[in-house]
Image 1 (cartoon, helix red, strand yellow):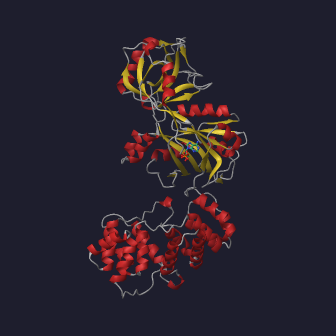
Image 2 (image 1 turned 90 degrees about the vertical axis):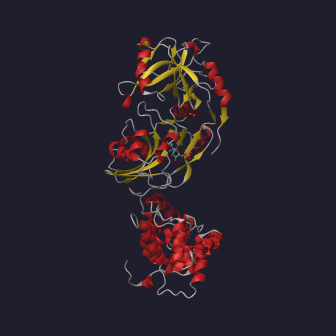
Image 3 (image 1 turned 120 degrees about the horizontal axis):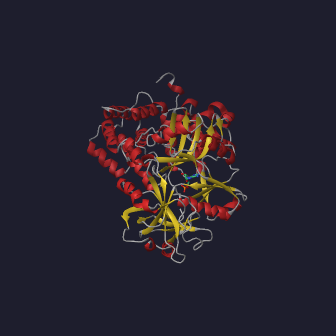
Length: 594
Ligand code: AMP
């Protein structure tokens, strides 16, 4: 640390005085004034430190610099710094309910004559806290403690209050990020009207300290020139919600793109050659959880430098089916990443590209970004641009939604083809359309196997999934209701082809109704027991066609083989279409708004 010219440095007591005022205030205007005068007093080079500390952090969130020291540790530091018995410190902490208040009180009582040789500066406090966050390895506790105690010994009781709160990650000044931008617009750029420009710069870099410093050093034009950067996460664009396809069409001017809305984890993927960083929706680094996703980005994204967004979903690599969200969450809870990767493989459905080959695409309309997305994302078993349909018809949207749901999605994300990528903002450029009803299944359903699909991955060379049909008693035929690939043991996979061989058919059996064409057809003979999370409407399965809604049949969502082949049942003993329609109606529940 360069210790020259301390008089040019902001005194920490100035910061702390302002914090004291901020805590006592509630109106946004008054808070902005206090912040603005604090910003005016701060040397340019120290602005980022001030901004991060005021946010209760040391660096922007995405860098993952963790402060939050443990309570026990803070008590030890305060005990040493105050020279009081640990019991007294603990008692005071419990009484005050907050480490900062306890520190202020104890130090006032304990060291009345304390006179520091030189006043603490903002820089000294920031650097010390930053050092503490970086110390690791053996003996790190003691080193951290030494550093914190030394800082506390040089601080006034009031300064100690805020230092300890910050160190514990409990500053909570009640200052919103956008209030800091307001203050910056007034104090640094000279007027409230510049707030929008600052906001945009913040939304594309997620680094408030950097934006404020840029304003101070380069002025308005510097801030206007901020572009998205590989490595700095963009604050995500968020969606509005409407409840019908017709409303969405009207809102978007009659012409939309409907995309599958898959139920996984949002990932913002930054690629720079072979180097990839992945950020969560909350902009935390999740690269370590998804090394496979990073690898896909290197291998299957044909842009050398790019920022993309996609939904990561757990996938059955043998059938290509997606699993429900809960399956993906195992991935986060697992300790061994390698093991988790094997046990819970994932696929990425890319849905946006904000930067590609040197170009900031956030200002481009959706259609241009989608064209680039389709150009650069290779379709593989693990990567693809999310399925999308451009349409002007409400009916087509509804049908597409059913298709998305039967493919494991939770609904649609409908996008305005003209909309830019509005970072950090919720708007009508994207509108969520979820189902109105869900029909949970508690019963098992017995279905006839009428077809099989070749497997891939570990199931290459065998069948990966089977096509299932219910029995339509009235018409005496077998309409399909689901594909199934989950729940089969290795032993099942081996015995099924043998079990089914005698019923193989080179054409679709005449009593089977199906819009899908499997790799192999079977005459309905073998009946298996299945469970599923629910029954959904589906345009691609003819079981119960038109009985709930014109043009839609019924399908199983997340179907699973229970392990039971119903040898005792003939195909006409399979669950009937009538029963399935009844189950759908019986279990229909309105979906909670969220
Ligand atoms: P919600 O969390 O219900 O507000 O829905 C928004 C989330 O849907 C996003 O944050 C994404 O994680 C997810 N999502 C799934 N598919 C898409 C898609 N095609 N486009 C945008 N977001 C999607």
